[in-house]
Image (tube, rainbow over all chains, first blue to last red; front, side):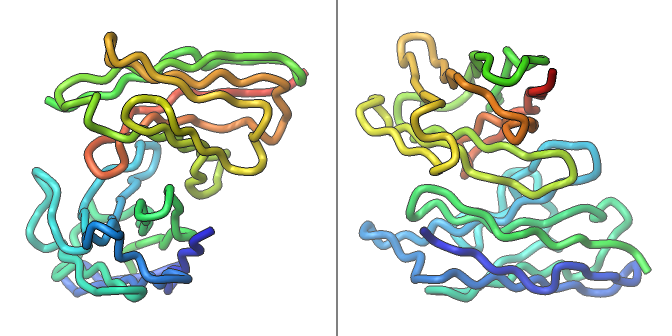
Length: 111
Length: 113
């Protein structure tokens, strides 16, 4: 089983400031077809998960460009360039290279 | 517009059964692996089951093996999860997902006497 480990688990951020979340997998997420199926999800309070980023760095339709993803192999990062109030929620990394598994979630809150 | 709409959740007694359904639209359902994910109250996301494009391969988290069955009907663009021998720890919101495309709104399953 692939274990996904996120840091930090809680991130208090000032509005307008950047935020960064790291995700590490227990083994490489490079699929045999050459793709890396690492995604980032946002879950606002009381809402279902929403896809933000897929295949490491591709923003999903309608996602603001202040969200960006990077990384390779086993280490990945989600960055928010300038945090807005609507960004409050829990962020999950998710791998779908070997079935599906999730990180523990990182709670983003405003200072 | 891509849409996944779950139904079938509710309150069931321990040991009981429930069948969840998911109607898919707006994407090529037959070209996608499909997934059920659950989220217990106040907890994180937990993968439950996967099914491949033609339904010939099915995978489950250990805690539901032998009790849950995932299936799909590609003629109706629908996904199902048959849940038997339900336990209190199965209480959660269940999401249907093509994880890299779309997630449903979820359906609540409560197992309690």
